[in-house]
Length: 385
Length: 212
Image (cartoon, rainbow over the protein chains, first blue to last red):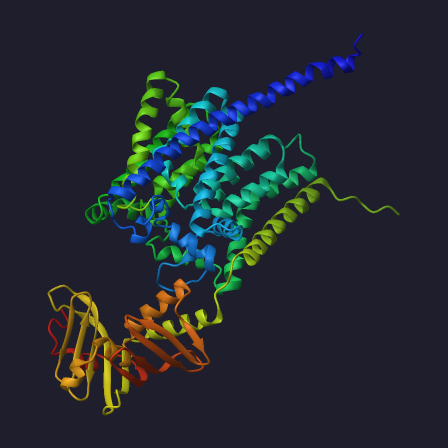
């Protein structure tokens, strides 16, 4: 006869095996979608390499098939990775680029990779990690079917071409999702580390503090004073990480705000009336470069998707942080690059997943996304992301 | 006597403060350990570029290839030689040579000796201490962390086929320039000056498109 303990063991082994198999199947499914999106991007990059357009990106970045993916800000991240920071007053300078991604790229270089290869590998593997973390977070917040759709859409999202460039967005999204997930599971130390790392890679990482604060508030009665302190620390960690960047710049360049001043050379200067300036200047911006339309459309799309997410009962802290990520850059007086910034607003993807509940809408989203993703890469030489 | 145990609010705040401090310290340490820092030569070069950016007028005394000593003034200003207003430089020497350089399409030399007009105009602009020409190059090389050599008080670099060596004073302001190219070699001493309306008129008024 089996004892009770033996019964439990006999039952739990197949359950554990089943769980492992299920996890592996899920990872394989995510990997497939990751591969579909990234294959489309690599093929489009090869097309750009073979047939052009040459556009604004330099010859060196047309030299090999994946060269277009190393263009634009990739040059700056590689420069920080190889040589550190330097502020040249009045000129575009590298302190505008946050340090975590270059630090990781330098780590890859120390392992024997070239700076560019290291940067590309990190961005693309980081995107796989982002898909896994994003799926887990969405599942926790909104259920399986939404997680499934949102992950598919994220894998082929048209603005998601930036996840495959030498940019830190994929790593930041992975860290934002991992931080919130850890918080939901009560692992506040991990949440703090991931949130801090996100903010050390992109300033948008700061906005994960709001969902973390809401989660901490929900759990307040279940937490011991020590864990409550960890939770509060996790909420403050992104700001502390940005402060650490300022302290570092002060020690090396003598200017704690060098990162903010460097932004000004790109025409970004935050002011309360920046939105008005951005909207007023649209005519001039359009006359100068019609590509600004893409970023204006991005703002409208993201805000529309966040509104849909609100109707789909996405928790409000995610809506507010998503809207902040999309709207705050407008206070710098320009629409530039918001298509890329909005990738760090998970609420927008959750809005898209809500739209995709309708099977026809689901098919349309997938059918339209892949060609747009390829088109985004083909136009990469013409306009920065 | 038993000590009082800290209250839960105190514990919460202390732990939060510890997390914040740990984040700050870890973030700083990672950057400090992982990222390289610019060399002292790069910072010196940037200080030199800052001096160059502060002035639009340079007075110079120079010789080229052992020729006679000439005095020059180089003014950075706005010009409109083809109707389009652009930034450029005019170098006027006391032997009558006037060199107008307005990128990207205008480079005109008038007056002076035939030997001077045969020289690479860039050599003259560099010896004349034309600030923007030198400043942009120094900044670019400093930013790329390559091509700048600091040896004692001499900052050396290359610019379009010329090799420049600037002697710096204690504040890293350039006081002398040596230039060598395939066909010419010269040295100058330079002094920055303030631009006044009268100086501007004197140097530029007879140039095409001046003041447009």
